[in-house]
Image (cartoon, rainbow, N blue to C red; front, side):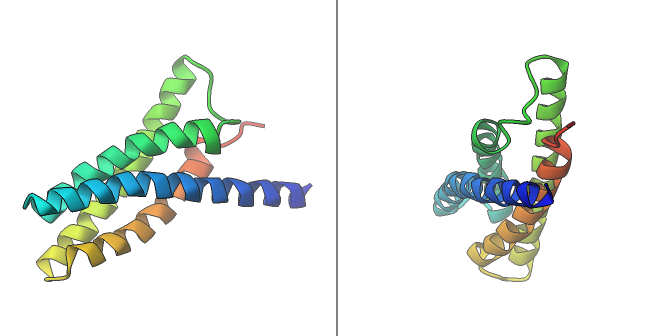
Length: 136
């Protein structure tokens, strides 16, 4: 039984990775566009990450955690709020890492890459263990 669970978790993590790549494409595309328009890096990072949040919810709730998405109603609203909370954790990490990198004189694209790794790990843990946990 634990082999089946482990296999399902690996598949879910792979799907989550794909969802994250899609959200990252939105995030990075907007981030680079905002940098090109001379938007401060931390502000641009926050705005771009927010667009990625919406992308991630749409994919995660339909293709990654579809078997544990709550039905419409209060439980679904709670789940969406938890998802946004996990996204805010990722947003805070991303904004802080890019902002600190900017203060330290590090290329914002390199800071953003570091933030991607940290944010991915944090949000995966929160979403897989809290937001979309199975009640079974």
